[in-house]
Every structure is written in structure tokens, then in C-alpha cells.
Image 1 (cartoon, rainbow, N blue to C red):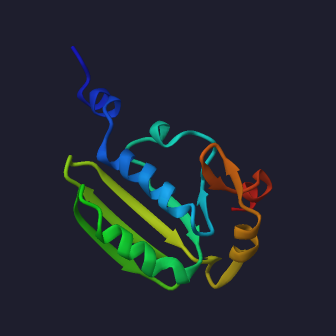
Image 2: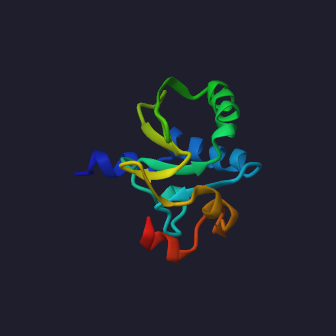
Length: 138
């Protein structure tokens, strides 16, 4: 008997296609995918959220790009001081929580400087990420 969860994971979800398109779009902006350990987007678990560090001034462009996606049913967002949370529901019933961070701060303490991290971005596979030394700090 086949496992329906495994079958869902095998097909190309709109979530996966969306992430591929998103990262292609983001190539024009300074950004870093956080928690990225070298896997391809297709290898990410279907339940995982995605954290991206970007400059705050690019948020309007991202909002505009998101509003033009035709494979989404609904996109909700919560804007906080240092992060915007996007809750993206796709037409094929897949889901993505996209967290766009502008600062790396916990309890009012900046533990890594976002601009420094963005300046030192490294291409890992097809995604902008960071040097492993920063992974330990984050």
C-alpha cells in the first residue's frame, strides 16, 4: 500500500516551484537564505519554513512580486520591527511560511550585523547563503 504523504512529497508542489521562482527573482537583491545547508529546494521538507535575510527597503518590491503570483490562493502577512512573516497558501493545498528578516536581534540585542552578513554572502549551489562560521553564531 502506498503512503499518501510520500506520494505528495514526490510530485512537484506549487510551493517548490514558487521557491525556485522566488530565489531567481531575489538574485537582483542582497539577500541570504538562513538555515540553508546546501540542499536543493526540492530536498527541503514540505513542512519547513524558509527564513531570508534582506534589506528592509526591498520589502515593497517583494510585496509587489508576491501579489502577482498566480498559483496562490491567499497570502497573509504580519509585519514586525525586524521581520515580516508571510503565510502563503497555494492552489494545490501546499503551504509556505516565509520569514523575511531585516535584523538579527533577540530581546533587543543584535547578535549579528545584518549588513555585514549580507556583504559576505556566498553562493551555495544556486542560493545565496553565508559562511559556515556565521551558521554557528546564528
